[in-house]
Image (tube, rainbow, N blue to C red; front, side, top):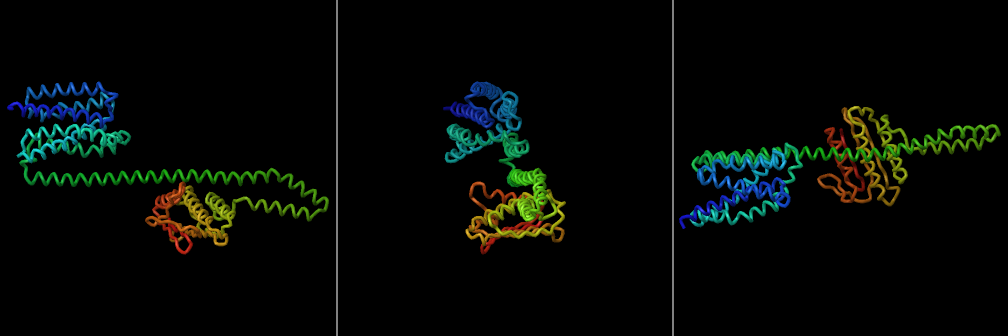
Length: 425
């Protein structure tokens, strides 16, 4: 029985080593199936080194030299030998060390019922090793592995917590006993440090999340603008094609009119000219504002509205668009008009369909007011109209992105059958 404590202690160290190596390699996305030799050689080499160090210098020295004997070589093995990044290598090893804490706590907790008997503590930690390792490999590793796709900033942020814990653990429990003898000063320091670290990580996480959301909104805006541009290019091409046809046929028209005048068939000539004018009026490029791109957008969508028997009333008195990127305004108006046309088209009574658009300047700001009738009651979430239909709802997000880009304000309203969109940029 006298050798039982030493035996359990040695077994516990073996299980610690097995747990740490396995968890570190798994968290670094090094599978056992593909790297079986690496696992076995790591167990063997680190195990022999640990046993020699334990027998020659004793347990206390082993505990103090563990970072240089086990942790650092394991990081270097993953970095140089297995070609992982230094961030992934450090995160893997330090996270594995961090997960040893629950293992140690279980031993302490169980032994507390037996007057903190070290034999009970070692036995409990040995027993809990494999179940805890299973949880780490099964549920923790798949998420840590995804860090290899992140940039250095995210990896540094994630590394901050296990690295801080590692330094404090060795500073206060291994190289000194301040954690147990330092009293309120050390306890308050630990509390303050954890609170400070929590707020730092929270602030940085929120900032990175905000940047990512902004990038996603900008990407959404670009995709929507690109799709919108394709629609407008097609519309412009159609108008240009019709104009080209009339220019090409102008010689034939003039020749026909010349023959009518020569034969004194004035009435037939007048009728022919009227038909030509009617056809020219159907080319969907009307002038609503001075900017050509905006005018094309308005002309295109208002023509679509007319085709669906939607009454349109448009007033554009604003003239200065120099502060804006025209593609942004085109995207904003195109999405607003497209949504309005879609809402009006759901009304069965054509006489109840209407769109009113007013674009004007006030106090050196651009104001856009749009109102349209609707047949189906819109659904709002946080004062934003939403749609659960496939392909819908993206336009509103694109509109909001444009307004926020220019630090403007916006509002969506619906009451008594009328939907209104207002913004000031």
